[in-house]
Length: 281
Image (tube, rainbow, N blue to C red; front, side, top):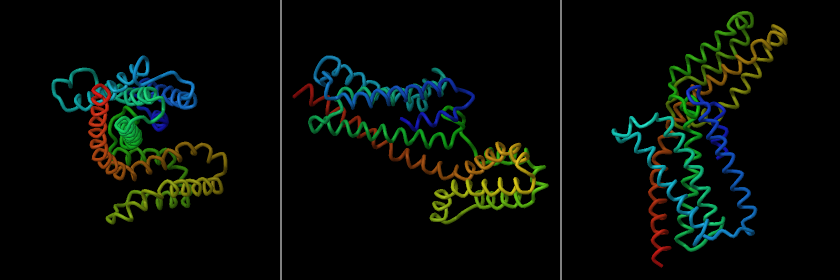
């Protein structure tokens, strides 16, 4: 849930209010879960009746409703029913509210074997969803934005660099530092191990190259000139970093899809077994 909150910091201009809404829902659910876990021994909720039973029904209904987003993308008749961004927002809201309701339904404790299996499956699916949203924001322009492209990100990096090109003309050492980092970050890599190594270390390399560039500019042009270009310089390194990491996050997102679907099937199978066991036995 906290991953969703951090992800909204880069929410697109197409839906910043919706992104903030998801962040607020994440905050509310996080606080509620912490409070519920802390006071679980004092709660009168029971899974068998009353409010506790109702929360279980509501939580299961919201988890089932999560499937509507997938249907919206795949069923032609549903494609004209509201913008996809709105469906995505509702999908994320339900992904926060559903597990929260189920946790209160169980009063943050394990019950029978079938209920424990269903609870753990739900937690795994919720955790997988948070991981998926984190990866999603790395290959889209914000939480509700369009999908990013390598060409667009590289163009953005070039535009950022042009904004302080005059300073680099007067400071060739800094230009060389940027050229070395950009060459390393954007060159094609064939080997899997080398790709993993660059993916894991690039953020540190970007931070180091940025500090070196700032130091060189301060030495050659003065601290006042550095302050003029510091924001654009940071944005340039961020743009190059995103352009370099895009392919890796796209592969991770593909792997996440292959992992998330079986988890969802296992969740609904265990939830169905739990409901049948509770009402028949």
